Length: 388
Image 1 (cartoon, one colour):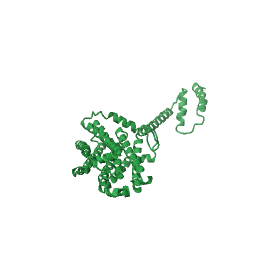
Image 2 (tube, one colour):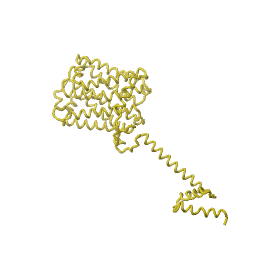
Image 3 (spheres, helix red, strand yellow):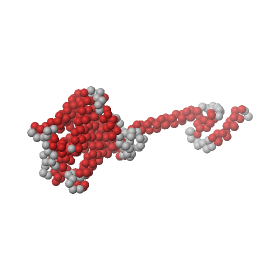
Image 4 (tube, helix red, strand yellow):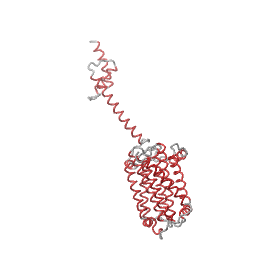
């Protein structure tokens, strides 16, 4: 017996022990060849070595593909949770598009037929029609129009994959906060809550469904792009307070020039005005309109104030960031500028005739000045960046 035969006989039991029942598959041969090679036995054909290399390469490629997919999912969803079917709808580009159309549809009757809408919203509490019904409900229409443009901006951001940007996270939080506030306002004043409420039963349910859809969309859009986690399947801490604190601390920093400074002034003025609407509704109605009669007018005024505290300042602050970054020519920022321009020009169209007719309160000119500034800043930036 030769030396080579002795080596093979010595290694054979090791092969049987290591691979006792190796199946007859393409991978069985490489595993046996690997044992021979590890024991120092030659493999004359070389075929097993090629199979081992090929098999190892395939495994590495498969692992690399799985890791890439996992990394991609985690970048879209930092918590690593799997999105359910509802998560795929809420916060998607199409859901924001639907939200923009819904808010625009709500704004139309408020602007065209305010007295008819007052009858629907307030029922018998709207009779007789107050002087303030028409201007206040038309201003409320501007709030819905602003929400529509904010949703349109988020739609464009979703298509561009920008919902994870801090600017659009802020806008999602503001949309969520505005809808949640108005939901609480409607629930607290619904006819089901007891006597003395001003909202009719039918208006309560219609509005609640619309606001609920807004909350669902903004919640999903923010949660799927937030590291701290707020989604339909995990309710983590909402970092709205922390984000607003950071925004407040950064507000004096206006390295973006005059345009960023003007947007900062608008942001502060809008928050201050909205807070006064909410905390002192009777006093501010007297100051601007010389009339504060009717609980339905106070209710509408507070609904407007909620939008001024939450959504519109987030829009102007986001535009401030766009001015600092030189992005006002991008489509999402253009949509926000259109929203601010619409709110400003709409206020001017509603309030100027009241002032010219000798009506209004002593502070109405100041309110017109605020919305005139908003119109000028947003309009000039749209013209300057129209072809960007």
